[in-house]
Length: 130
Length: 290
Image 1 (spheres, rainbow over the protein chains, first blue to last red):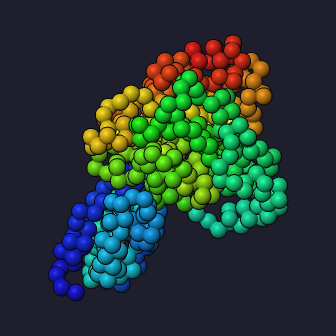
Image 2: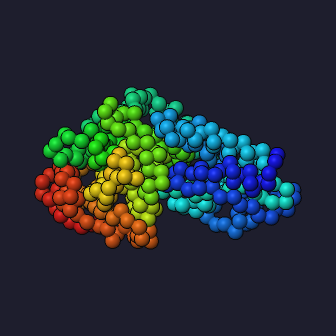
Image 3: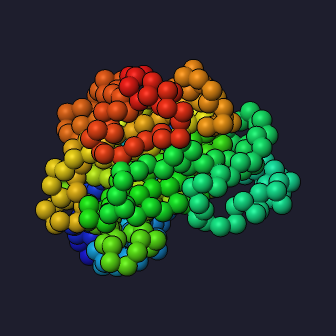
């Protein structure tokens, strides 16, 4: 796949907003990850130095509101479904077994992460859920 | 989320299915037709065989003396009056008790409300995008988690008002948590009404959704299982009223600093609330700060 991982993910996420009670952009992130080390919620929490673990989900579940569950009556949301599908494709093709880890209470810090070489990489965004 | 609650729920649901089928078979119902199903006394949050919804307008349908911009819809999970000119609810009214909380996953999508009449603009989620205001639930998502369908009904845009995130995730959220504690930990039956006051302009200046200056909530608190028929004196119930400014900079504030009277909210909204209460009891509680 051409281009750096960062460039591919940033291009795929450019201009997209994760919509919950409010909305937030997607930002690229990566952190060092020992090759072959198990990727689970406990390890990710420690690596991110996060606290207040809220949930772990798959990409499709986390982005459901922008994919199959997008409101058919909302033309803006419908127009972005193909771009969100493309984002999921780029994430799944660029990262090994990407998952979503969310932390916090009303403004959840959510990380869409998977292994890529010696890093754990992906996108972060915010889910506003009160 | 665990599998066990579902298993327990399934067993209870099977036992009571016939009893509740008639009451639960339609998604919409009259606000004057309560669904009362006997409490089974389950001790865990997740063992209730059914969400027991009583009358969502137990103490009277809010009335401002005019039917203009007052389109009332009654759903299984709540009742509300929609203002087509302002793109949001005049009021939303709902019963709340411990049986309404469960483990259904939170919805992921806000939906336009197809129940509104033709000619009434159906607000969509993207009307809020980049406006600087959050999609502020009236009936909280968490308060309708017995099933996914119940939860979905809180994600209709008719159950939403524009709230600054510092309000939505600040004192408003803290008050929601307090009500959850009353319902779950103190075994209370709550009857809640909420809405907005004032006009700070419209989202993105688009003229579709009015931004309220305040959002308010009125809560009648009674022992679990009780309602209007149990009101015999001022001590039969308690009433909490709050009016919170729709502004930034209040995220750290507690909800108690926004307590007010029902009379204050009535004066500002022009709606008459709690009209079914006996007059002396209504007068006492509408002039009392909790």
